[in-house]
Structure formats: C-alpha cells, structure tokens
Amino acid sequence: MKPETWVQMALLTWFVLLAIAEVLWAKQGGEQDKRTGDARLLTNFGLTALILAASALLPVARITSSDLAGRLHLGVANLVQVPWLAAFALLLIVDSLAAYWVHRLMHATPVLWRVHRVHHADTAVDVSTSLRNHPLELLATVPVASLVVLLTGAPVSVVLGVQAAGIAAAIWQHADIGLPARVDRALATTIFTPRLHRLHHNPERAVHDSNFGETIVLWDWLFGTLNRGEGRQPVGLKGQSLRPDHLLDQIWSPLFADRSASGATPAGP
Ligand SMILES: [Zn+2]
Image 1 (tube, helix red, strand yellow):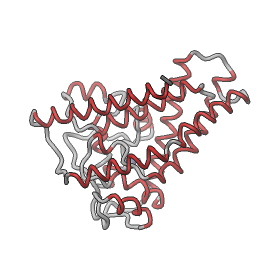
Image 2 (cartoon, rainbow, N blue to C red):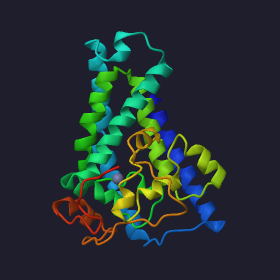
Image 3 (cartoon, protein in one colour):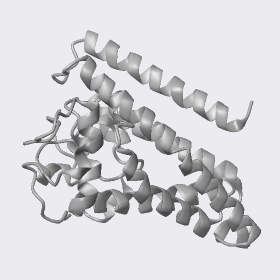
C-alpha cells in the first residue's frame, strides 16, 4: 500500500474515533450545541467532499514543490544535511506560521472573509466542521503551502507527515468533547484543544478574531491573538442572510458581501 493510503486510513480512523468520543461524551451528559439535524451534516459533508476533491491539487502542488526544491537544491533541507525529524519540525514550524497569517488575513480582508465565513457559519462545532471549508480557500492556501515547501526544501515524506498532522489537528480541535480541566490546561500550553478552538467559532468578532493557529499555540501567543477564555463558548455567526445549513447557499455565499453582524474592521491582536 502506498504511504498516502496509510495516511488516509489513519486520518479516517482518527475521525471515527473522535466522532465516537463525541457520542460517548454527550451520553455522559456533556453539553451539546443546538444542532439542526440532517441539513447541517449534509452541508458539512458536502463541503468536505468538495474541498477534498479540489484539494487533490494541494498534495500535487506541495510534492511538485518538494521535487523542484530537491532538483534545484533549494531550501534549507537541501543545502545542509538535516535528519528526518528535524526537517519535519522545521516544516511544521514554518508551515504553521504561514497558515497562521493566511488565516488571520482571511479574517481581516473582507473579500477573503466572504470565503472563510462559510467555515464559521456552522451552527454547531464538531468533527464534521473540520473540513467544512469553501473550495475557494485553496486559492489562498495552496500557493503559500507550496512556497513554504520550496523554502524549507522538505522531502516528500516530510511533506506528507506535516500535511497529515495538520488535518489530524483540525479534526481534533473541532471535536465536541470536554477534557478534564487539568488535561485541557496542560495541552493548551502547546497545542489547540477543542475548548480553545471553540473561542475561534464565537459569534462575536471581538472573540473569533483570536486563536488563528491550526496546530500549535506558539504564533497566537507571540503575536498577541491567543485567547484562553473560560468555559464552553457559544458558536456560529450573527446576522447571516444565507442559510448556514444549506449546501447551495453556502457554495455561492462568497458572492454576497454580507459581513454579518460581526463587523468588517481589520483584525487586531
Ligand atoms: Zn477562522
């Protein structure tokens, strides 16, 4: 089996395990969002299918960049001998920094927000929210991710590993599970926990313009956007004119300027 297939199977298993954890947590009396049922799941998985189909471009672009960097001896890992783990850590750090700024820009720029708000429009947050993204987001993320691979000169196996870690982290931080406070606090010193990421889905712009990181909390901490908050936060967007649980409405929603009640001022720390 190709390494890509192993990675896909591992991610699918991770998704299913966290979905089961959500059900168990709900049964144990965990707080739940007000979900609107099948229409929401259809919208989330419809958008997930679209972005997965479109994002076939992402590994192609990244692996091509990795090949190109190797052939042209570009990037750190092609200029000096770097062990696999060091190349993995380097790409993870640089990639997470780039992703932080792309995400922050998507909140700060009205035209990019029109595309990114599809993710925030979800009326609940759980594993099905993880890949609820408009396919147009790839126009912002693919070129940046490819440039990062070129600059770091990461080999293909490292590119695959970092990509898988990013998707696993996205599924994890959207999972609707409550961790014991002590575990949450310990993990939140390094990575985003589901509770921390819920703050990023708060309907108020003053709150959701924070916690932009997708894996590590380092960049939010460094650039002053880390919000540790308290307790379980509400989620969704205020004042939406389009139906958040309607697949077609969400697909064409970037055509509409409605910034919702969360405002259109630039994001700030
Ligand atoms: Zn966001």
